[in-house]
Length: 143
Image 1 (cartoon, rainbow, N blue to C red):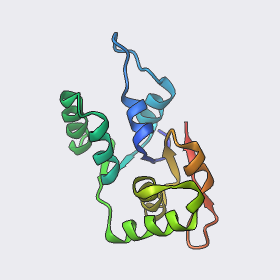
Image 2: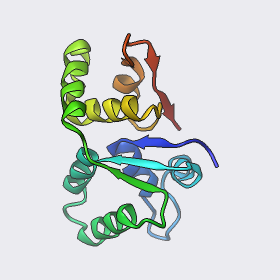
Image 3: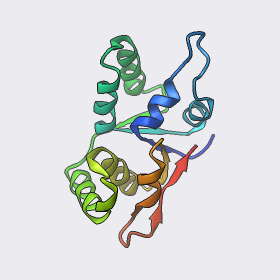
Image 4: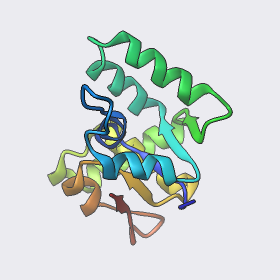
């Protein structure tokens, strides 16, 4: 088992994507989901995924069921007010990136939980920012 990770929208969508014959579309993302000890799914990420899966309600229902099932390695993480405030601080501090609320919340949850591995496709933004009290902690982008 590998250490826990925080899932960003793009990373989680890629990790769950399959071809018509059921093979993983992005095996390296699926592997990250399968081998992580815990997959933390911030609430705003789930809301953003719902937007992308609006035409596939069955897939959305399966994902929510998996995330809420205590037998899986998923943990649903409601954003705290302090996470929202920190997300806005990070967005302002790294203004040139247009980080936004969802990615900012991913970083804030990672910071609060001290889980610095992030499953993401957003290498530019999440690879650039730094978190922690002195903004010195980089995120480890997976895969």
